Image 1: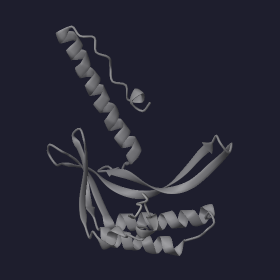
Image 2: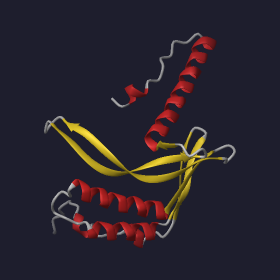
Image 3: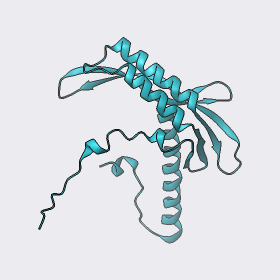
Image 4: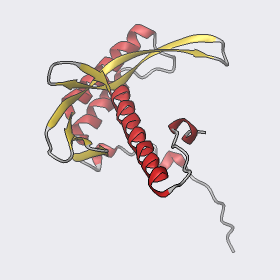
Length: 175
């Protein structure tokens, strides 16, 4: 009888490249009456990002100026092969176009007690008047509107049915 040892050998799966499996994809995210939808050329995007990663591969942390170049190239690849728009779900009217951009992040690390900084790809929405709004801000505003509407509904239920339901607080949901 042979003993079975449970385990996962990650090395067998390390070199799976999704761009060799999928070619193109359509994607969407719906939040209330807003939908972010678009197309992704997965094969070209995956190949381009792999080439960029190979070019900048290092055992050391990249200097900040080189890290910015690296992220700029990743952002260019995303913008070349990912097309996203923001539309109203009920009318399909376009609200904005989405684009990737390089963002600079500074954060204080409590453990090391040092300020850390880096560059990373991020997304922003460009509205018809040319105004850019970063994706996190826009989605947070939409979520705030959702919770406001939900709490208004709770007010109505409490009043109409003499209930004592508590408001939904998004900050309590993350605890």
